[in-house]
Amino acid sequence: MTDSIKVLVVDDSRTSLASLVAMIQTSPAFTIVAALTDPRRVLDEVLKNKPDVIVMDLDMGAIDGAE
Image (cartoon, rainbow, N blue to C red; front, side, top):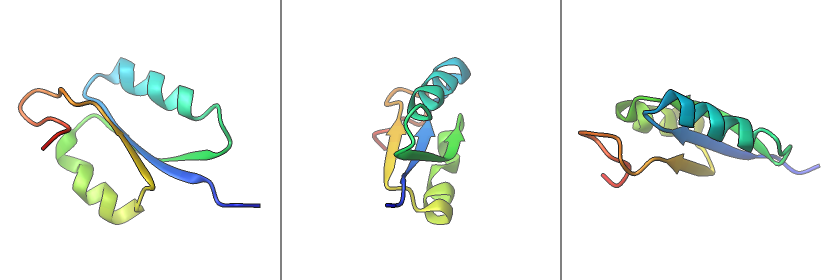
């Protein structure tokens, strides 16, 4: 069996975050390693969990997903 794809999800909207996590979790190919509402924590979580994929909102107020 192959390892699952590690996913980090970031969205400042708790509703959107919960929806994205629920959708991603429907596939056994993916494992959520972190789900964040605070974009300032992304770098720490990337270094800690080493995700294969980051799903990030690009419009999160003062700090956005493109920075």
